[in-house]
Image (tube, rainbow, N blue to C red):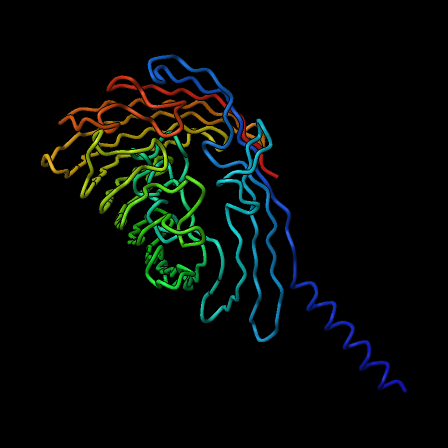
Length: 381
């Protein structure tokens, strides 16, 4: 009898221990502030906007111990507009992320669902907008998706373990179409990270993004470009010296037969068509942590665009400067001030590419210059 009681006690203890290895976490973030755009179609704009340094969200994530060091993992994340309560990402309930998978301490992690691609997971961490500054500091039209403008649906993702600071991963996103390649996406990326150094690179390709209702890239207008094909390559380095972090990043985005940009509509000249559009972005960024609660950051990006139409080749260019100050009132609440200025030069194309547009501005400028300033509060729970 005593042996049976002892066995029962041990079994109960093991059950409690296993249960302790499983958890579900509710989390969220509010990013709300006041924006000023100096030129939106020729007029000044004053507005409240949500989710610029980080998208406003709430979510659930969990893990269950399956035994043998294997774990089940899941995450669902909803994006929303603080000002109106509207759903983000084209009205999707869990438009930011929704996935489930398995994690192993020896083999890595495999997840399935709506997720970020390798550009966001690896390369973006070396840019200002993808790490500490957000939307306003994006490269023109967020052409390389470093700000995560679009996620990828129907996605199988693999994330490796960290081997001496080195990690890699990749995604494959199904078209869910009888035409297997119609609106599919795939990506690969890697990074090497130490206390002072981060080196990352990634590649992504989307075929016919937003061409079908349920394909890999279709976010209700949040996609960067509607085109036959979009290829993105990026590489960057961050180096930390004491309280200062310095970074340089390069990305190349090639768009075949673009129809429009998800931001501003048609990009080809009126009455014409474009056979290709290419963006090359070179970014320098710096951040200085004056105290644990306060930092200043700055960014400069030079972007050269190449547009091919029936009339020939044209090369507009974009210079973007951004500054940011951030002060933490507590571990979960901070206030920040940031501004971004863009100037467009080079060739004219007879299209929207000829005028300035800072991502996050109220609208496209009527001139080659545009300034956006934002003051905001961010709270995490």
